[in-house]
Length: 142
Image 1: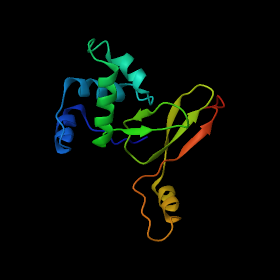
Image 2: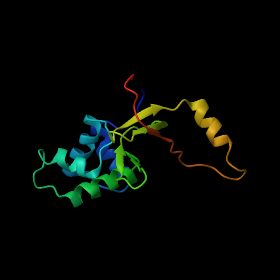
Image 3: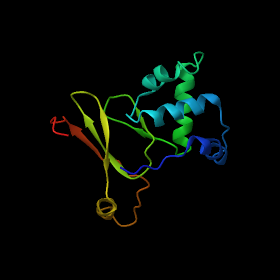
Image 4: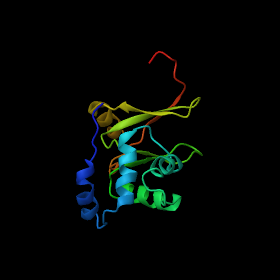
């Protein structure tokens, strides 16, 4: 799958372009999302980054994640009644949420499908984002 992510070296510039400054906490949170691309929750990110910055708080992790979403560095993925998950893949794609395991996977979304989906909007409407989520269970034949 292709993915549109900002290299960690470019993180400071992207944050600055959005009026925010880079911090060690934002760097480690973003790195945690890039290293293991499994759509973690804030609590899962917090558990991962504590080994790098032992004094980091859960509130700081939430603030870092919100800053990364605000700067369009990651996407917030929401499932009904579940905690928000974070995805660093900015390329157009869908998600498959395995209801048995809770795992979430990226699904390629070809541009022709995205064009068809957006073409059904009523006249005068323009979608800024399209979120497609498949829910089900893996069959074990992946």
